[in-house]
Image 1 (cartoon, rainbow, N blue to C red):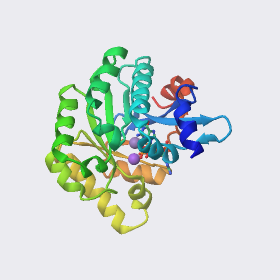
Image 2: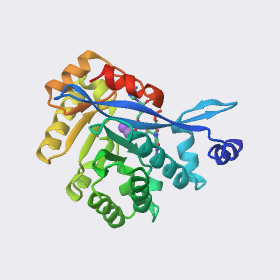
Image 3: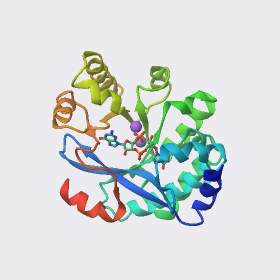
Length: 250
Ligand code: G
Ligand code: G
Ligand code: MN
Ligand code: NA
C-alpha cells in the first residue's frame, strides 16, 4: 500500500510533530501537565490522524522507532516547561512489548534530563492480551525508574478489574464514552462513580477524558474525580502555544 511507503519515509522527511493537550487538576483548579499527541502532516494527504497510521506503523514494524522518536521529542520539549507540569505519553501495546522498551524510556529520560516523576506513560488494557508475566515485569521495571503508569481508555477494554489487582497503576483515565453519557444515562453515571471510588480506595488518581461541557466538568468535580481533560479546557495545541496555555489555565 502506498500509505505504508509514505509512512516509512515520513520520519526521514520530518513529517511528524507532537501536539499537546492540557491536563487539569480539579483540586488545585489549574493546569498540571500535557498529554503528547502525535500528528502526521503528509504533503498530499494532509493531516493524517493517529488512529489511521498507528495501526499501520505497528504492522510494518515502524512503531518502535516512531515511539522512540515521540518519547525523545516529548521529554526534550517538557524540560522547557515549569517543573510542576507533568508529561503524558501514549504507548502502543506493540511498542510496549519490545524487549528494549524500558531502555528506550530510560534513554529518553537520560538524554533530556527530565525528572522521571514528571513522566506518565499511558498504556491500554490491550497490553495485557499478550504474556502477562512479561507485561508485569516491564511495568515494575518502569515504576522502579520512578515513572508513573496510567491506564488509558479505562473501562473500554476486556476484564479490566483483574489488571487492577495485579498492578498498582498510578492513574485511571476514565474513557470519554463514559464521561459523555455520565450526565445523561444512569448506567454511565453509576460506572463513573464506581471507577472514581475504586481509584480512590486503591490509591490511584482518576482523570476524566473528553470533558466538553461545563455540566460534565461540574459533574466530575462533584464526584471527586482528581483531574480532567477535554475540549472544554483546550484542544490539543502545537508546541508553540504551550506557554500561552499555561498562562491561560493557571
Ligand atoms: O490525538 P487523537 O485524539 O486523534 O488520538 C487518537 C488516538 O491516537 C488516541 O487513542 C491516542 O491515544 C493515539 N495516539 C496519539 N498519539 C499517540 C502516540 O504518540 N503514540 C501512540 N501509540 N498512540 C497515540
Ligand atoms: O485514547 P486517548 O485518550 O489517548 O485519545 C486522546 C484523543 O481524544 C485525542 O485524539 C484527542 O484529540 C481526543 N480528545 C481530547 N479531548 C476530547 C474531547 O473533549 N472530546 C472528544 N470527542 N475527543 C477528545
Ligand atoms: Mn491517551
Ligand atoms: Na483515552
